[in-house]
Length: 505
View 1 (cartoon, rainbow, N blue to C red):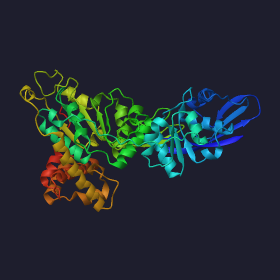
View 2 (tube, rainbow, N blue to C red):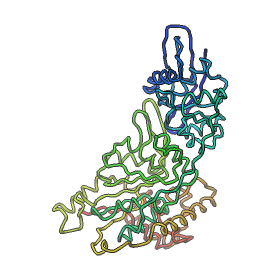
View 3 (cartoon, helix red, strand yellow):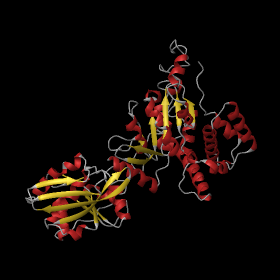
View 4 (cartoon, one colour):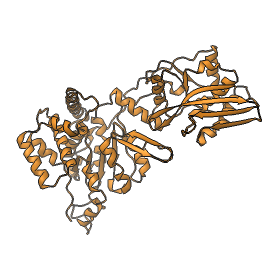
């Protein structure tokens, strides 16, 4: 007796097909799983045994062998429980083998036979649609699977319901797609009192997808500003939502039956390790930068992060992806995120305030800011100072524009960028921060006096080629916010004002 069940294993976001073969043969009673299974798969024997016993059945007193082919590919995850059980039930004649041949099965089993959620159902459903298969998955994740567009989905609450479905006793209904309700209430930008120049910088960063570093004393409003950035960003497009949701599904943080239509906002603590930031570990799972894909990664107290963790951000900041290499696996995750960072000017945070600054100022500021390498700072488009707010300003009510007003300008600027990209026959770019090479030169459209100012400044201050081009992208965004066709001198001047300047010792 031999049965074949289709399932998958993951390598990053990639879904690899696995042919799960079940053989029940004569011999001493034994239950063996081969094909490079991990610990979770090896333990599935007891879960499957108990789940089948919950049906009132017993495993045959024979030799049961499970082979996960291809045998040289490492298999990980508890989602193999359901295909193992289905293969055994097929060999026992409970479920016809031909009924299962057109499906990919994933799911974890409880001891009572219920099928519980697993990570990665959305990418599995997309894989099933591409390979012309149906999908068998946990009932609670049926709504998630429908977002793939797959029309043949069996979302079962337990094994007995699945058996009855295939026997025609009680058909399981097609899962309902639950439309996400945009109920996320973002903090409003008008809550931040004062800091008009910082709000202007935040608007520019949002419009062009630029990285931003805020430097200021404690309590000046840096974290408040960062927390309000999502309120002025446009919602995810359908393609971005699907891509982001796939990553969150793999990580197991996707909300039940829903897609992510709000841009991710990840805020890891400064004691985060390198693997937790960029991804990795034994199973090469996605890190914070991938979970922030198409959204925001906020690093508060930037110099307090481990130096090696910060240096690991350099490649994804440039390429928009992260390659994780391990002995047993190699995974590539998308990591197109917007970096927003905040830091104090020195360890005590009171640099520039004579009454409060420590006696080692300004040398302490030089040492503190030296924790950040030049190449990392070079990848951050905008550097702004966020000074302390006076008590008189704090005593006032709400100040400045609301997030809705600013958001409308950001959406208009992004539409200008998107339309311009489409005119050049490019559909995979959405913001000026992604511009590179010859395309940047074509789109920049510098006036002569603006070009002269930029070249003169770059020569005098020894700007790197990266810094030169990032300034050009930033100026393009400032011009787009003003609906200007060409980049003027005033746009270059404002872009240059956001360049990093090191403290003097």
